[in-house]
Image 1 (cartoon, rainbow, N blue to C red):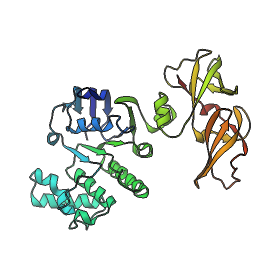
Image 2: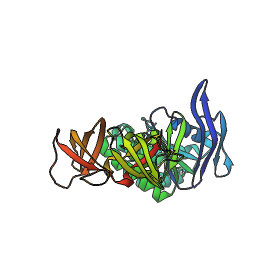
Image 3: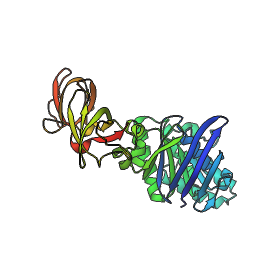
Image 4: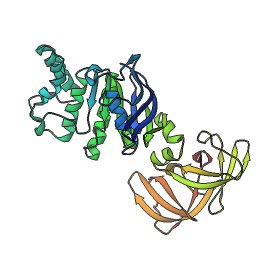
Length: 356
């Protein structure tokens, strides 16, 4: 296992900025995810770690070894590509064995390592099959076995589940995480899928427009977003404009558009939030923290949309000029209809402050 460190890494393509000033320190054995929308720079960063791109400036280290200008074959990495990059004319065994043959291992060693890798990804008995005879999920597991069989110091995965259907994605996601925990290999994973990132990662780096927005655990990223972008990109969130009316110690009172006053706490805020009276400030309120009923921080509105998912009932509620998303866990109780009035209570701990 090796750690990965990027120091002030920037990559430009002519006049176009790919990524700018990326600083990360991935711990040995950690599952670290690059998360962000298309074009945010996550794959560019991964490719610099792999050695397919060299940084325009900055340094890349594997532990204490400077690998900034090393070629990919000198880095001992395993890579799983979005399209798997398998050889269709080869069998499963031959595809998995390819990296070992390049390293000129003996036939006996190759046989032993490939069979072990096939078993690891539940493909034992598939060695003779052609790639074209496999399902998408099986091809993905071949790609994973090929990356793992060389016993890499670092495993890199670039959107490896994007070509799979929803059910298979979930199954394969669990399989990848199982293997990572079992092998303890340092893993860097690229995805735009928030669910994948939240479910699999020890830590997440959120990127946008080539810049790092936030690095933290899934809980930190979800519950403590540092800015408007992270709050809106990660999961569902109600982002509501408000004005600070009163600050008394840690207690903060704000007014939203219809004149309703809501109470929150200064400790539940993004870094460097200015709580000066009269300031405009955004509230980030997750749909699942809102509860049906009266009490402190209650608002009343009209239901505009009802969505039943089985696990939950999702409402869109119009409160004055605001459209608020609400998620109620399904307990078999009566479901309200479009046009019904509903009273909602927003717990103080569910209000997260983000500066303008």
